[in-house]
Amino acid sequence: MLARIDKQPEKPLRKLRFSDIAFVRAAVAQAVDETLGDQPDLAAAEKARYTPAHFRSLISADPAYVMVSENAEGRRTGFMIAMPDQGVLISCWSYLLPEFRKGTHAIRAKKSFLAYWDHGRFHKVIAYTRPQNHVARTLMTHCGYQERVLLKKHMFGTDFLLFEYPLTKTLSGYAPPPRMTRIGDLGLRLRAWLS
Image (tube, rainbow, N blue to C red; front, side, top):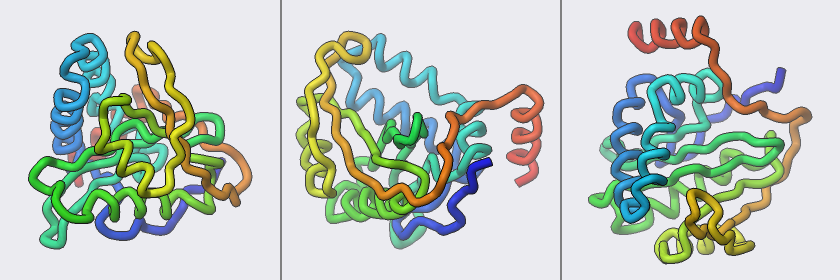
């Protein structure tokens, strides 16, 4: 069994809690509408993927696979979702609510995410963005990601840019993709209800 990392991410991030699932699901839907609204099939598939059971499976595997950002007053400002895949950490979604986009909050959150995952279980972080998303491209480049390639008709026939950020893997073994049995999910539902 691959050990979890015991450390906590630096502010403004923290690991997902059961009480955050509704917030993150609503924010995912908002992010999808904002960035993929012109691709209804892709948008519907992304919204359908992020179910409460999916988030419970991520919490079970490692609550750090979903991180919630907060401002100085403790208000939730956004989220980051990642998934392990064969020694690589895929940054699936990073989103900051529109009212918190001024200032350096997004940069601090992204750097906290990268610092948390370095010197651990993964060789690199990969992230995708659509070529026209100049804000995401600028943010990732500023935080040290390298733009690698344009993937034509990559997901649902849509073009995406692939970005990479190198990490230093220091722990042996590889994190498996999160999986959940029905019995395991029932146990997590009970834990969520009790917390």
